Length: 357
Image (tube, rainbow, N blue to C red):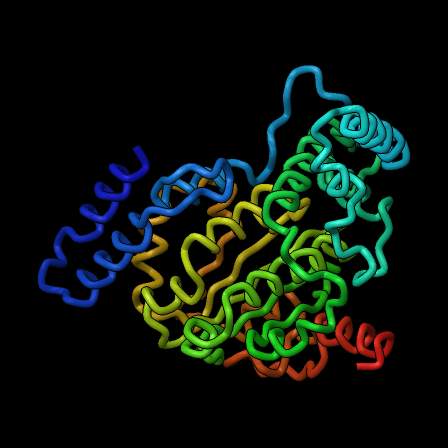
């Protein structure tokens, strides 16, 4: 079904542009990438990259179900969530097949790297389940414990399946990988976590052909935990800011294997307690507009409302207006940022001081 929709969307976008080689080439690349077969990071079945992506997006906010347990305070939610975890641990302990026991003991989660405890992990899921009926009114909010636990279960399932071979003994071992990716994280004027990435500034050929994909995967999963444990993200969500530049569509979307992308997207979008408040694209090539047009039929109105594609406006003015000036890193193109250190660097420096590396 999704693949037929893709054909229809590409056909509509191509109408009237048969002589436009750039748009024709972009449509071909979109079809090639999103039509590629991958093993879904959700159910392990073979399907198109587009189908796997849409499946993951459908998991983004979780589902509220009839009979779910709601609590009026975070403290009450934590008590209920801990009880469900204890019950699950007992089930695994009593079961003949208790291969996932260590996963439910959170031994696969890099707690130490982020000075986090088991309570911190559960709190992240409880906060994610918060439903606010009136903004800024704590009396008009509830926590869906059942929804939080389902999300936690899916997180444990993913970690059990994909993180056993990832070395999370000490995050400082990924310091060199972080330098290659050179992404930055800060907090904006609203207290939100902001993830900055200047794609054109990265050595994409090195990342794609020389940096082991397992190292990239290990680093990105570790980085996802940094986001999850960030207090600003838990309370206010995360903003993603991307500068694309002159990078081609195929080059930008195939930096890492599509199968790895599907697996990682399933983790961050479909299983982690992360709330994306806004995604900002600037310094965009012409193909970006066609990609956004192609994507619209597959995205919800809520998701579309969170996307900002800066076209003719001054990106510095727009982004400073939304995020504030003080949170912008110096390495981001066209923004005039002055921030030299970020949360990732701070974390590595702390880990280095502890390990004497």
